[in-house]
Length: 327
Image (cartoon, rainbow, N blue to C red; front, side, top):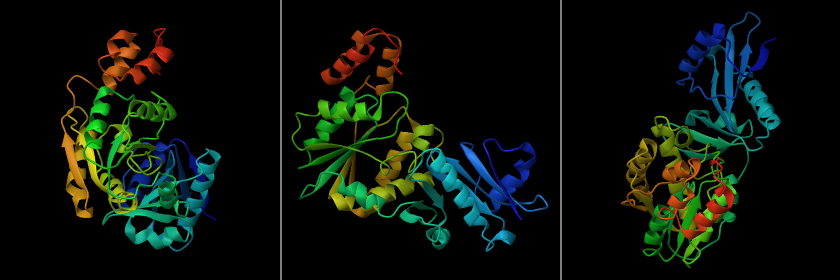
């Protein structure tokens, strides 16, 4: 009977066979797996593989001669069990659109699809539940998406500009924990920093707005993968925006982050086809969240005042006023 094992580090002796199996499925080793499931024949031949990275099941491949023998189901079952053991109760996966029926039979449901890639989740109606959790507005809205790590005067400038040009504005704050400012604190700082703007709703991005599940390259700060960038924007353009009446998206120019700059370019290329106008505005010179974090690490609290709203400054004073480094 084929042997199934889960490893946290791939044995070097298996790497050539592993990479060849991935290549046969049009995949490559992305190098960020937390663990990998390997299914081998009695003779030691690699039949199937799959990996877990955070909450994403990825790099799932089955040798052509093992298809139809339940190899994929065994890999997926093992990865789901491992994900649950690690506390990831809501896994996602990426696959090619031609594999949709197979993964549907294993309990996955489509989230977004392009010509090259399909994103699925191990839960029915996840996007709909997320949208239902947000405040509703009866009319057209604009949207801003920000990490706000932390909320700066630059973010405030973008939100204020957008709010003046829309009857209603959603500000989506990324929900991923990135090791700097906690997600709940970032969300609260944006809410405090925009409380005087009556037509603004500040909401969490959840799993579906630039998360590690939908667009991991944003967090890895490596070369952006256009396929996943396009998939994340398709999810926004085809499902989230129409459900919320979003017809405009505002972004700040990004001269420092190649990943974000490329994302902005793809946004301008793709979103208009779904009736969403994209407007990119110049950023305020000399203001960035990374500069704020650098000053905090150096204990230079007083120098933050020109860079952040008073609400963010008060938070930083309370949390880092002793000169403790930024987390």
